[in-house]
Length: 284
Image (cartoon, rainbow, N blue to C red; front, side, top):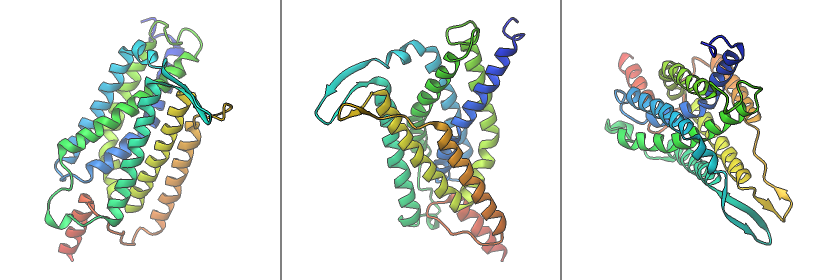
């Protein structure tokens, strides 16, 4: 009751919920693109499982926050003539996630633009198990980065909301649950919109490349990588990245509104678009 009557707690809850939703945009984009390659009846299930996995991973990491923070300690230091630093568990997870995201995004762009058409066979180009494995792997990285960001935010807050204060853990868990529920509600319409518009798909994959680069920079920063002993790698502020994403989407929404009667380009392995075009051809 003391926590519920504290206005600072409600401000922290709203702030963290908004932060989790913003940080979850990349998760929804990845979910939309991966689930878009499944059969139509399997796509909602993949989205639900993906978002629930994100919630579970985040809550588990919060309960194991002491272990998460201990991964900040370096276990391998090196000082070569060109580069120096100290590799930690956090830096490995974040850097590895960035590499995986870059590889997956570039592969998807290549496959959608250059890959062989599989939609005519009536088979999905992906399986539900394969999609869930990919989603789970990336969820671990997204959850790790999200928790580090959330902990950094509450640690910088004034008491009694600072990390370690009474109610801080409960507020973060509540924010995670609320944000996942909101994303579950909107994941379907967002996925449908993304998969129906090829330019949005390519933009989304381009955003994932940006986020992958951001994770590489953040992983290098966590490892205190320096070149020539003084040029340290700095992390990329998330605000700049997400501003670029939202501005690009705003411009594309204007383009879509101006050219709403134009028939979109057909990308490879787009289950939703394949079905929509088949329905239109049948009606014609």
